[in-house]
Image 1 (tube, rainbow, N blue to C red):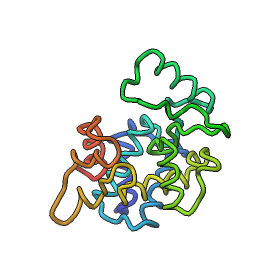
Image 2 (spheres, rainbow, N blue to C red):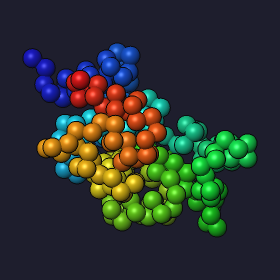
Image 3 (cartoon, rainbow, N blue to C red):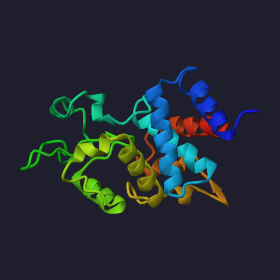
Length: 199
């Protein structure tokens, strides 16, 4: 008989990852699950949606990544700037990736693509670590997992919290996308969450 944790990993491996998980992915999933446990996310639907968000926001890698999936900060900045200059980022009013006076860039990092200085500041305060001194810490697996869990639990990304969409009277898989990114790909991420949750 498999344990609930073994069943959870089976669901992720079979339904999302083509039947195979790398050791690095297993470690990252464990980091996210550990962050959920540390920060009181025990509802199975909430936990599944946190994992679904990590899967989606990292383009299926289940590992902390830089925005654009760049290998370096300089590459991420260059790719974003190129897209912006080509008119491919019409939603961007202020190019948040351009380095500030101290050379720090606030492009997306982690499991949830934390962007903009104000969001790095908010998560720094919530976690008790200073991401503004070194934004690259958002790529550290455990830190990225804490950012994901606390940000989603407390509504720090958009104002919508996990408990707003998954509670004893509500189960809103589609609305859960508002926690991170409006309704962008809401159907897709909802499907991931349901699959992880076992249907």
